[in-house]
Image 1 (cartoon, protein in one colour):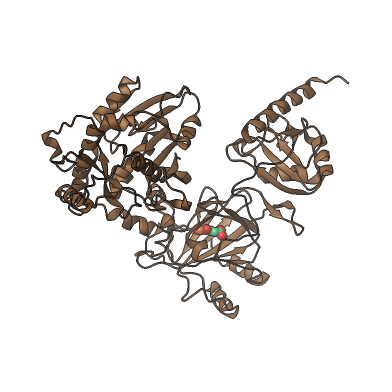
Image 2: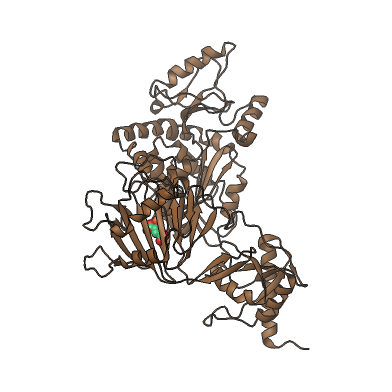
Length: 633
Ligand SMILES: O=C(O)CCC(=O)C(=O)O
Ligand SMILES: [Fe+2]
């Protein structure tokens, strides 16, 4: 039978989707029915919510799961049985729209398998420290609690209607602009006495999380379709634990960890949720604004459940003083302390001097040799660059010899570096470059789609300056733009594999020729030679240790030797002050000393987490470097 025009269109869409799927994931589609049905034109990118899709598919049989991939406009339904899949396919493909206002029908295809998600949703594993007490209050108690809230109140801070829900505070007002409470300014309304029985009940149940009574209560009222953005209750505002009583209706609350784990937790009506320790400090919680929730059934399938009106009572304990938790990434008290320790301008001036002498001047001196040793691009950096779409503006901050430029990817490439000599190398190679300090980029905000900072900010001598450099990169990115940052790791031998630095160093040692990070000159009495160098180098910065090559880093702030290539002329001018370079009276070649701050594990994440308007979207270790992809939000 001849195809009609709708069938022809559906087939064309299907062919295109199959091709894209294969390109993206290597997964082929199948002409025969399978349990895996690809939805070609609905996914996270099109704003699809999994409960919509489930509602559509469940009438045809059991569903084991829905796989939605970040950044993709397609998704997959995993049916329990091939029969269900084929029934759904026959009914939906090219015929049914998801919602009446959608422009076209859904196009489906059978896939041989589904892509594996590195971090999937897990209904079975709750965040550590999370306790859920079901049927904590009776129906009568529920009514009495709901009735004791007087929403009709004229004071501006009471009974607020936020975009997504209605809220009312007792004890202290939670201020949504600062995400904190004014501890000096308690409210006249205390937590209603109708709540008092809850604390005895906790004791009766042998739950000993409370050492005193809560001092703050926030009542949230959610209608179906409303929610609360994912957040961690400010550490400095409230102690551990936080309690939340669910009244009126049940709901799914999503807990998210920074490592990508998502744990949806069903909060049944009349249950009490206790968020303590890791669940309180290191996982964010939120409620997605939607009218239905996806929940697992007893036999493990997924189903949807309509939401009703829910009122939650969130009880908290106002904290006196600062938080001392160990979950630093999400702790505002820790970040405040961390930033303050660097606020000293005297320290800033010393740092600037150190960078000038042991970074800027050294790179001017070693530029051509440095450039000769820098040809091979790092594969992960290259993939980042290649992931930027055609027409992207790419800024390489601290571009060195521009080894990541010239990829013919249709990018507009702009390099900048402090070193005049390195900028000249790039210019001679035909690239657009200018000189500047990465602490203050002479570029308009929001102009870049991608930004590189490869082995740059570890040359900045204070946390505040490193933060400033990252803030500058985020500033020049447009929303959605990404920066890739590489810094040297203190740990050069992670997972028992040697970093390229240690490997390179070994090679150098074998060949006994020059390159990056060469050893200091060795005499027969090597130690004497080293001491001479140390004394000379440390004259300006006495507390800075000199790194011993071929070894793991012993300190975080140090001077790393660079030995000049043999046969190169040494031109020392007065500026060098003898500290950045030692010209040995013997036959030895001069050694330059570059300042480095090598990063501990987690340190780069912490630094980036202090940068406004950005989020860390990827974090990894790559051959002796800690690396982060930071997205401007
Ligand atoms: O509605 C809830 O259960 C949680 C409310 C909440 O997280 C908050 O107000 O901080
Ligand atoms: Fe909260």
